[in-house]
Each structure stands twice: as C-alpha cells, then as structure tokens.
Amino acid sequence: MLADALGRPLRFIVTAGQVGDITQAPALLEAQAGDAVLADKAYDSNALRALIAGMGAEAVIPSNRTRKIIIPHDAGLYKHRNRIERCFNRLKHFRRFATRYDRRTVHFTGFVHLAAALIWLPRCGSELLQDHRIGPMTCSQDAWLIAASLPSHCQTD
Picture 1 (cartoon, rainbow, N blue to C red):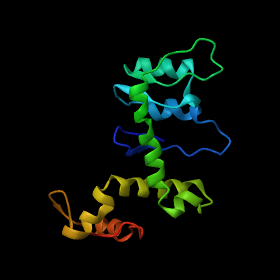
Picture 2: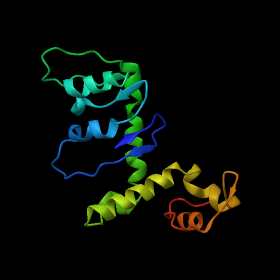
Picture 3: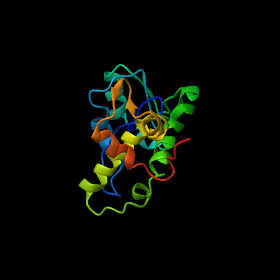
Picture 4: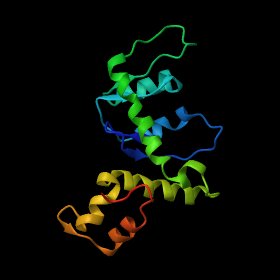
C-alpha cells in the first residue's frame, strides 16, 4: 500500500500472502512525486533506492542488517513512517478488511477501495450525515449510498 504524508491510502496492490512486499514497490511508486519515500527494512534494495533517486526523492529506508555497507538514513524523518501503520490500523477497523471475509481478490479489492474512500472523508463521513453536502455540491444519491454504508464505529457526533 502507498499512503500520503497524512497517512491516507493512495494505492493498493493485493498479492498472495507469501509474496514479498518489495516486489510491488516499483508499481506503487510509478508516476508519483514527493520529497521522500519512507519504508521499513524489508524495502532495502539497491534497485528500489535507484528508482527513488530517479524520482528525485530521498530514500528514507534503514539498512537491512545483512547489508555489508550500511547506508545512513534520516532518523528524524523515519519517525513519520508510523503513519502507514496508522493507515493500516484505520483499515482494520473494518472487520471485513481485518478478517478478509471475501474469498475472491476482486471483491476484497473493491471493499478496500470503499474503505479507503471512507478514510478520505472528513471524520469518517459524519459531516456528510450532518449537513448533507460534499463540499459546495449538494449530496447526490450515490453519496447517500456511501454515507449509509458507514460502519457502526463511525457515528455522528
């Protein structure tokens, strides 16, 4: 998963459980712009670091302990990597995501996109329920369907 600096989901690629995460990193970073890419030790590879440098961004990835020459990283900036973990935790509030009820990947991916849209809504969509608007536009029937499908933990104030 790719998340922005505020911990909001941007891109997803669903893979099999035994597939390493680094295999999908180039596809997630494709056509993205930013000043830095934060990742954990599992993403420490020369190829990924070269891809990030080609984007004009700084690779904030701690070196794997098996690396012979340790590459330093900005520890202060690395502290912000917890935002991707927070994003995963917000997604896990949806029981269907956390337990993976869906057997088919296409169904699971569809729900992940719906859950990500709800995360992007302000305060989990409660403002939609209060004033019936999305920004300056009036609420359409489609927006009502999204607001009506909010999980039980997203109650209005």
